[in-house]
Image (cartoon, rainbow, N blue to C red):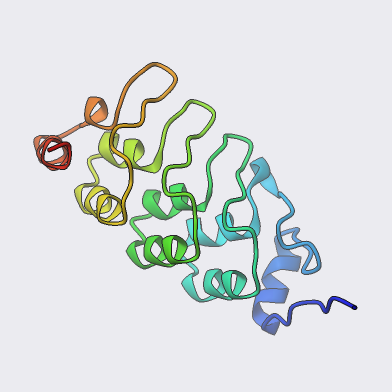
Length: 153
């Protein structure tokens, strides 16, 4: 049985080439170990991100810091990207090299809507980072604290 190369749109193939990624090795790391999926997610390119998900990239690739693409979706407040990554099976509770999760990041950055979205998708608010802190410990605003306190009940 011969495996066929995924068919990518010409625009995505050009972007991959221009950014140092090979269309025949879609999970390969680039800068800082970021995969093409991570870089596209960070830039908010939802159509190309979805195209990579459709052809079966590893949604759970991690960069040198141990973050997956969900971290970048949360960083950019890309709510549709968060939904698409979760639907594709991303590890919503991925802990990076410091033990931090995307939920902890959202709490520390005061991103109430991102935080609520992650909780709605089942993110675990009880996880602890390497220093023993939970997302509640990182609550940077009263609104974040209230959402996390309510989630803990």
